[in-house]
Image (tube, rainbow, N blue to C red):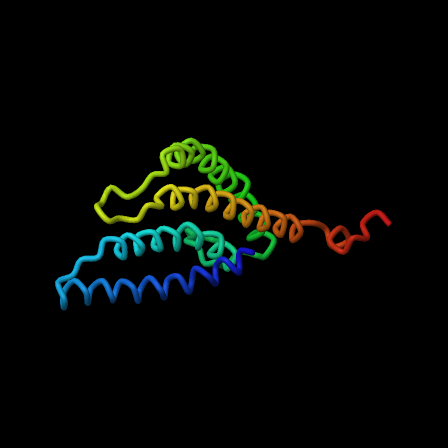
Length: 164
């Protein structure tokens, strides 16, 4: 699922760039400002980061402070990744989800919309993406943690024949 979402985000980025070019042409060539289009670009920008996070983790493309990791053995890398998931990433996802629930619920309770005249009516939907971000990133972190445990396990345990 993370792979499919990541691919969709890649295309969303292309759409965002094309729409931003259209906004620039409308504004500077035709002197037309179009608030809904500009806000749609902001929404897409937020979605790219929120939904692209799990994809970046899947592809190992996230930012890493690489002091010793690059030269480390595969088991050491697995141990560092597992510790990062358990100590930092999963707690971050749980905390983000927990703190976002009332924020999103309040937005849904009033069906929050743009404050701009002519703006988009779906801010509550965009805020819901925060919950999806936490859930999707958490699921990808859990997948990474399981993969790390598998890499750290004895060879017999990995093949399913341990204790036989």
